[in-house]
Image (cartoon, rainbow, N blue to C red; front, top):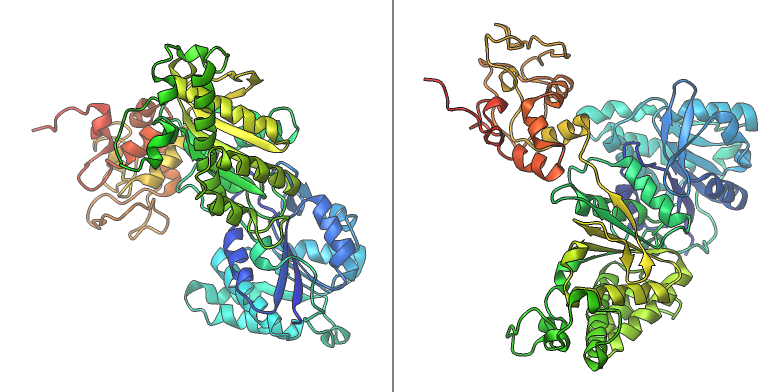
Length: 570
């Protein structure tokens, strides 16, 4: 059947607010008459699309724009760092004037497109005249591509998508006129949006996102994220350990790392990003498959009576017991990874319709000794052919506390790394690992959050608004005056009632007759220097735990239980 070809490019660099790419991809997957191919917008991919597809496809670009000091669009480099391009630099990338249609949904993107006209000549383009709400952009996006898929002209698609935003109601109806169609002339009106059948991958495959779920209320660690990505991407290391004390955010970091770099279209691990918990391996491997459900203990029977110490494992000398233990731990590791592949692996593969995910699922039922491990090695080679892939092993113990069973797990992990040329392994532990048997591991220690990110994380998780008396008692220096304003060197303006931009929690009523809530900016400034946040030390786990105590029952942060607050005055 005839389908409109869409070359969808997006850029959402690390350190810049993440765009809601997932909702746009979900919409593309379910629109009839659209054949989409997804790309991360780098200089190279944008050039390739303009040269090879611009004259017959819709070129869609979702990206951040900045206007100062000069207008720029922010693309990504190979590791996800921001790469800002001016209009002159954009013009030199490729033949923009051949574009059948450019859709550039970035705040204020009209400025850049009109400058492209000056450099390259006019072409049909839909862009944004001013900053727009994400919800309005999603509404326009979905409506436009529905009409496009039905084969209507570009002009009709634009008009009806505008109407969809205008009639959506609420505050978004005034956003419709910000989506402008420029570079349009009467000759272009004859061009239909539908094209010949496309040869690109179907949307269901090209939009595959292995780890699409973000970490709730995550506070980014941009420098660490880019450092780890560059260690892996440059081929310098195949194994990195994120380490630090309990609650520092190791698991959240790895899950967000998986989410970001497994996005479709050419990010580092678009092929696959898998997440397994090392705690699952602390029980003996056969326990999970026991027929009678009995628990014979945590230690593997091959190690129970061999008289070896943890340090002995993996160095030889265990004879048949060690060999049995190796085989069992290979199978148990394979079982966990295959389960992840079955859920999050690529749906396609080199063996016809039997994709990686389907083959991993089938292998879960194999009972023959070594069958799962052999299947995993085979799939590892297939994943290597498709691109780079990532495995996270979360929750390894500190090196000096490793049991013999865990040593065998580590040995099996190294064997998997040795068998795959494009696998990268990201570990977490409370202690710094230096080697996987004989393979060096780079250690990256997570530091506590700086005061401002710590204040933001705390504020996102509280269950009521913050007030002046959270920071100083009335009548004290730095306290609140009769009007409820806080006397301090920080910006401490008070929001009018009801507040338009107060900190949001899970609820809690606001008493109009009491102290008025602080504005977000003022509350963050005061939180940064508060005794409570100093006591929490920037540890994310403690910040979230402490935030859960802040509800209407807590009269002031000064009386927070984590401070060992004094008894209430008589």
